[in-house]
Image (tube, rainbow over all chains, first blue to last red; front, side, top):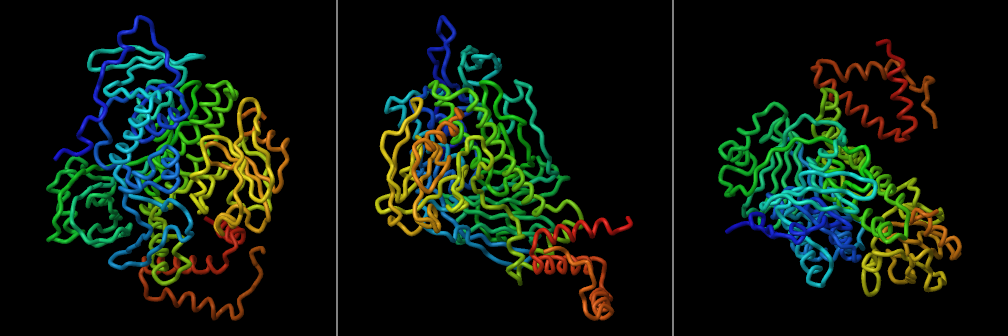
Amino acid sequence: MSKIFETPLYPYQRSRDQDALHLVRHPVVIIGAGPIGLGAAIDLAQHGVPVVVVDDNDKVSFGSRAICFAKRALEITDRLGCGDALVDKGVLWDTGKVFFDTREIFNFDLMPDKGHHRPAFINLQQYYFEEYLLSRLRELQAEGKPIDLRGKNKVSAIGKHDDHVTLEIDTPEGPYNIDADWVIACDGANSPTRRMLGLDFIGRVFEDNFLIADTIMEADFPSERWFWFDPPFNRGQSALLHKQPDNVWRIDLQLGWDVDKEKEMKPENVIPRLKAMLGEDAKFELEWVSIYTFQCRRMEAFRHGRVLFAGDAAHQVSPFGARGANSGLQDTDNLAWKLQLVMAGLAPDSLLDTYNQERVYGADENILNSSRSTDFITPKSDTSRIFRDAVLDLAEVYPFARPLVNSGRLSVPCTYDGSTLNGPDAVELPVNLRPGSTALDAPLKASWLLERLGDKFQLLAIGVDIPDGLEDGGIAIESLRIDASESPEFARRYLGGARQAVYLMRPDQHVAARWTSFDKDAVIAALRTATGRG
Amino acid sequence: MTLNTTPNIAGADDFYAELLALHEGRSKAESDAINARLILLLANHIGDRLVLSDAMQKAVSAGRG
């Protein structure tokens, strides 16, 4: 049976642009049809922005690759209209177990705070993630939304100009040229776009190799994340076991720096390693084997005029903590509404500089967290190993040491503290919903809160009278009145100890500003600030 | 709270002897591991990040090397 990632899902078709007499100019061209490019395309198309997506391939991701999709990424895909498909297929998990040598030293629950629609994480092969985004894209096309997805279209040259970008594209039938008002480069860690523009990609190299073996087996391991430090079957190194749908198990074995990659990837070398871990009698077959090294690095700027970089093309992190695809989706979540406002002439070009500002801030936080995880998992000096082992020994006996154990931190969205788009704060309201924060979900009587938020500016009023029809400079604010009695979680998360609140929410479900009473002038001023017109 | 750098341990000689006794007859690796665990236990007890940072800096600057 052929796998989904072996099937061309968007085969090459000749486009009209290839026969056009005059150069065709497109409003937005997205380079790369991975999770981030597809997410960007769906987001923009849902807002009626015509997009052309080009990819040098015509299939979904080969092999599982990214497998952990965090709560925030699922909430974003809910807004994109395909969250249910992902969660229905994905493996739910919230328990992690940590082993040191031969002992289980402790386990943890990822999200003790209940009352959220989406779980902390699901595990899902990247090829399924992409397949479901593609289905959503096809659904939008069927509804007449303007998305043009072109397989086997490889960008071979790119030129930046003040008011447009030129692209030369190679196809099986030869090259053609198009122009674009805007380009979003989502072409991965080795981004050819970045290279063609001669842009930097600076950071720290981690000298280590990890073997990924995605293994198909009937096993009765529970749906938990198991992480080993220095296990008997991989002495001096780490190991990870994680369940994916269809009885596929992600096994991740640290190999060290001086290894022969070609040799280590051969089945005759991989299989004995897995038998040492799973037992001599374990029955399994290999779905996908890969060896990776990694770097933690980012571009100095994610915006270069009319070319915007998102996902791994803009920043790369270690895989510990699931901050790759998850943070890439947060990039396009941040970018789509800003680009739409700028393209519609409703916000100044400088609003796009705040994409760079906010997502560089997010990338730095992700790089910091994933570097710290990596430093814990793979100590780089004798002393760091002594402290690492001391933490693990203590964690088995004393709870105080468990927060120090770092086998990858839960990927959570960053709060854009200090963003120039943030408006006034009301300090008596809960601190974790301060301006710049992602909205927290909460159950309501008939739906979830996040199902009612997003895609436009909204004024969320709790116990305060607000009018309808607020608007400024062509940008409307939807009035949303929700009573604190809808759920205790909603009241606790949005009011804390206060009696009433007004939140101005951005189209990406982030808090722009908040108050404890309604003042029209203040709301309009905050809307201007949040759209770069302050 | 600031880091207390005035004498604070009753029976200083007894304390010091107990500390050295911990390491008697142990290998360098065992001693290093004990010291690391001890630092982590004490650090957690102190808890105050400013005090801990101050102690770390003073530990570095008081050395001759």
